[in-house]
Length: 140
View (cartoon, rainbow, N blue to C red):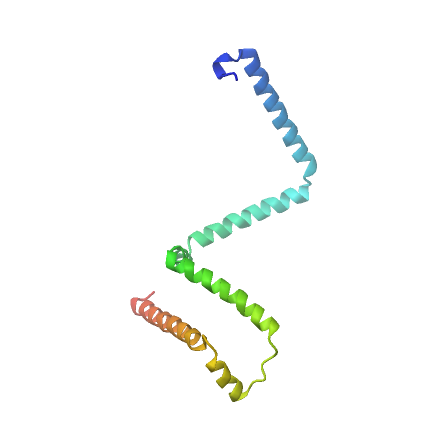
């Protein structure tokens, strides 16, 4: 194994020139492969992406949501929520259509987890309502 001190100046120069030649070949190949339309679309997509990123980073509500979602308890909640969506999707796809009516609704109310689910939705709605009232009181 040779170190930088062991290489002669000519060997280093050849390595640098070889690298530059390879880079020039890569740039030439990219130029040949890209059409003017492709370059225009890429420039437009890049511009729109930068504009979107600017809008997202100036959105105070989104930044607050992202900070809240970064908390461990919210991470666990999101994982549970995504698992629930997957299971519910599977259950709906494999279950016969609901017949409806009051009797069906009463049977649904007797299912395990229905009251806990309604409680969860109720608590989320309660806290959302309190938060919105507080924001309006503060003039937000």
